[in-house]
Length: 196
Image (cartoon, rainbow, N blue to C red):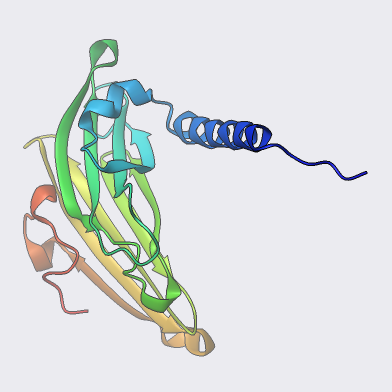
């Protein structure tokens, strides 16, 4: 005997699925959406997060990647990167925002979305990108917090590329402070500067 699923039943299943996915995202980051909601601009939603203590003050800090609510695989819209510093009683403060660190959904061309992950390890904040096919490339952009000057500056920008059948001929371009000086987080842009 064949069972027919009613629209209400299917809608209920969809709601359960969405709540599980949402709770998984927030559980991974260990933060309350209510606390960060005020920092999310209209038309955007959370895409990815990382937490740590970049300024070593004993409070959890958050690195949040946003995406447009209308984003699709062909989107070239910016993905803002927010750095929120934690404080007493769960208070959060927006330390910095940059819309030009995380590559867009279509920036990987035919290979798809290059975004991989964001991480916070000690005073280091990193965004990793990678795409693959016959031609493989990756790009890791890392910033560092300076506890003396209270600045967040570019630490290094590393691009690696190679063809699948010639991995021994990998090309790597690493830019560091010698190349770009003291470049603040808010002034960085992935599409300017270094010859790749």
